[in-house]
Length: 177
Image (cartoon, rainbow, N blue to C red; front, top):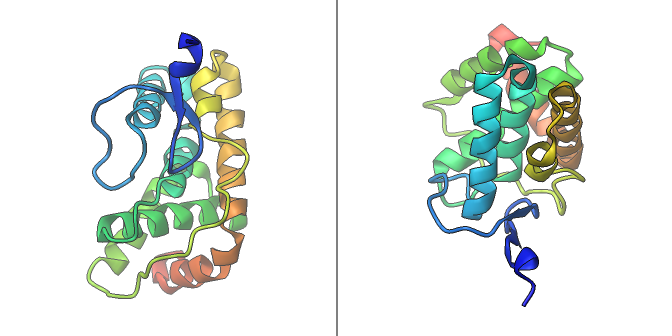
C-alpha cells in the first residue's frame, strides 16, 4: 500500500489534491476536511506574515468561489455572489484590492433583505488552480502573484455569470461603475 498516495484525496468541491484527514469543515462552503485545513493554514500565514498577507483578498475570494455549497443553503448562495462581486470589482473595474472588503460589505448589506440573489449555475470547472498551489508554496514573495493568478482563473471560470454579477454590483449605488 502506497501511504503517500493515501495522504491525499481530491476535494469534491474544487478538485484540489487535499490532505486526507477527518475533521470539521466550514458550515456552508462545503469541502473535504483536508481542503478546509489547507485553507486555514494559508489564512494563518496571511494573518501572521505581511508578505503572505498581501495575497489575502485574492485567497478569500478564490476559495469561496470554488466552494459554493450545495444550492440549499442561502448563506452559501450569498457568499458566492459576494465574492464574485469582489472579483468583478478587482479584475473588471480595477478597484484597489484593498477596497475589496468594503465592496463585499456594501454588496452584502445592500442585498441582505432583498430576495434577488438566486443560485448561480456553477462552471464546469473552477479554473486551473486551487488552494493546493498556495499551500505548497513556501516562497513568501510568490504568494501574492500566485493568489492573484488563482483568483483570475476562478473569475474567468465564472464567465457565464459575469453580466449577472456586473448588474448586481452596479445596482449598489455606492459602487455603480
